[in-house]
Amino acid sequence: MNEAKAKISAYLSGADKHAYFVAVDGAEYMDIRNFLRDMSAIRLSNFCRGDVFPDGDEFIEAAQKLSGNALALGVGEFTALSGNYRLINRLRSLTFKKKLVVLCRGVKNFLLRLATENPKFRKNLSVVESSDSFSVTQYLPNLGVKTASKNFRELLLALEDGVTGAVEVNSELLLEKVFRVATAYDAIKLREPELRSPRTALNENQWRKVLNGDKTWSKYLRGFSEGFANKYEQFAFEQSANFEEFERNIFDALLKIKPGSREFTELYNLRKVLVAGNEKFLPGYIDAAKAFGADGIYYLTDNTLLEFRAAMELAASASNRSVLEKNFPTVRKYLTVFDFGDERLTEYFRLYKELKLFNVVSKEFLSQVEKFSAMRIYNELETRQAILERTGGGKLYWLDGLSVDFLGYIKSRLSEMGFRSKIQTARAELPTLTSINKDFYAEWPWEKFPKNERLDKLRHETQKVSVYFCDEIFIIEDMLKEISAALKNGETSKVILTSDHGSSRGAVICRGRTIKLQLTGEHGGRCCKVDERDAKPICAVESNGYFSLTNYDRIQGGRLEGVEMHGGATLEEVLVPVIEIFA
Image 1 (cartoon, rainbow, N blue to C red):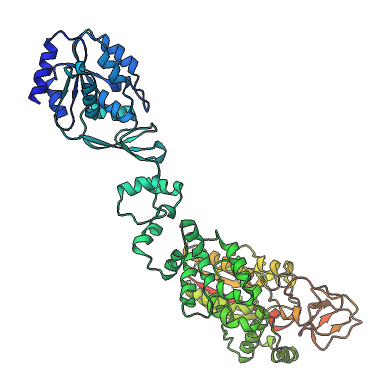
Image 2 (cartoon, rainbow, N blue to C red; image 1 turned 180 degrees about the vertical axis):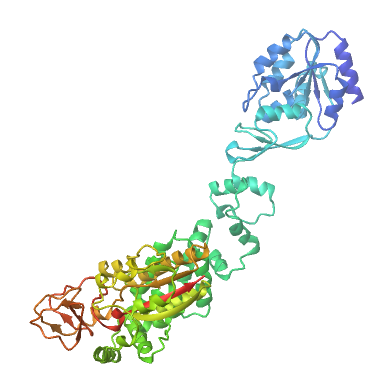
């Protein structure tokens, strides 16, 4: 160091017009800078515009116009990083008006080689023994990594100021003697050496987002080092080569397990929770489940209407009842026996619900239909109007066509939602048509919700026999949400849920004799206007100018439409609920 300072001093006081070069690194660089602090500096970075290499011609031109001795900075660093030695070669071959001391970091070996090849140059070179002072990590700008130097100019400026150690820069230039980071994965791996996730776990765009703080894939990436506490997630993870496969296997991995295997039920239940609310891969999953034939039902859930429908399509017979009740709480709640307080009604609707859900027509049930047809036991019940008058008011909800077969389901759901309820069963007016049973709504003196016709329209308009039950459930769920909102937001303290009439699936699939009368049957033959020329059929009741059938026979001319019918006088058509729901 002392020798270098002495030689520099001799140069400054001598007559030599060539530039003087000092090869110096490490802390010694700033020592030389301080020694020459009285000299003005000419920075190569000032001739660099952003992320480009500096203009050497402009730099040399400026150096030759200097009015005083100067210290040239950045030449060695630029040469080392660019691999372009032209600027140094030009500087050593030119003469200047004033003294020019060129401090060079990173090119000691090159300068020594020049001195060996050209003895004349040796007298214009001092080499200060020092260690390497900086290393550069270069990030491509499109990675979005924040670095101290945003471009090559800022890097060169920092090096001129004597920065040491690890230096980072955003640059697209082809630099030498740097650690070049071209992918987001490499950038993350550099900063997190303990990262165990392979490069293939995510695509480059995803890695870039991770690099810039996106936590979307954090749980998945931790799986490579920590695994998953959730057994199904771990199973799906083990089947997946990357996140795309993992995301899909959260849906599909269960398909690789046989329903009868020991772990199936546990994995099924874990999967159901994981995929709830996510329908991205649902259509493909349903198709794959259906490919198993009847066993496909084991893989489906009631998370969505689409999946529920697919399950009901596969549940073609009562032999599937056990898996439906096990995997589909909706079905289990519907089939739960509701106690009407009358053993006859309780047993009747237990059998009716099986008929509706599984299209199973038992002799036991048909005998009950005929038996109660003659007994007219609905006359033992109060009218809807009589019960409504005793409620003392509340906000009235009319769900058109709500049948009492849903009482068990509604009771269960209200309990789950935290509401108290009082359930009563009433009888509608005959015939069980809306036109005969709508005065209760028009005459209600208190608040009421808008009439809800979705359930009745569904039954009249759809022909999808195997799946309409699913749509009914979702309509009822929407209704319960509406009622819940009204009670919870203080809109009312009590809601009264009722209907105009019930509806019969049995009247569609168990059609008996055809009865000929003078006038054409209406509503699929469930009722007919009275003509004085006709004697009342034994299986009919007369009311409000109509004959209404009390069994599953039909009046000639009635056109069958939809999956359920009303207008007749079977128990499922006549009985309607009156449910008081309290906040």
